[in-house]
Length: 277
Image (cartoon, rainbow, N blue to C red; front, side, top):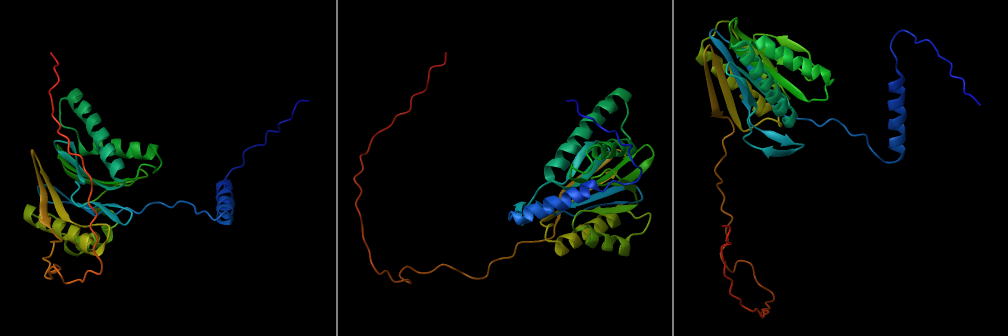
């Protein structure tokens, strides 16, 4: 017997079928004693500022895995091209592989055009790639560089939206860093003022965010020159332990003592090199 399929016209407006589906799934998992996995919180403070002659990028060096510090001195400022660098926040593997892929594509573009790539080109390639994956690539980026049109600074969000601003911050410590920028930023700063401002912004993120910590890396990009300072400063210096926890032999009394002799057979071993001729 043939089945009839009635074609209903698609109605306009938004569809909330997935919302009802998600609510039903959540109710069923709660009955089974399970919990729906949540997004993992990542910790980082990255920022950048445009000054009179170029761009200064900054980042902390702490990599976390949940509430565990996985790496105390990881590099979050990634190479894109000789005149463009990119700070990454979010999932470490996503930021690393995304910047490597765009760096490779930009190198091919530079070889075909026989000129240095523009910062806007790198921005467009990054945002198109991230938008294609609808936010599933957890890479929040701060892109900075100097090209034939001068210094440029972009913030790129995981879903593909971008902003071009004179100073930007990203990561879980971005609010503390932005407070420093909004208080002390001024246009046409010199290099030392910009480096000091970026250093203090990253330090604010380190001291006010548990996901940020360790050292401060700074990258200064000017026309024809890149100065990558790693580490630029150590915000959290390890203190010296004042207490002594060594005790003299006999401080703790021994209640019982038993010595069991082991019957061991001593054998001699010799190593000979294998003839591979």
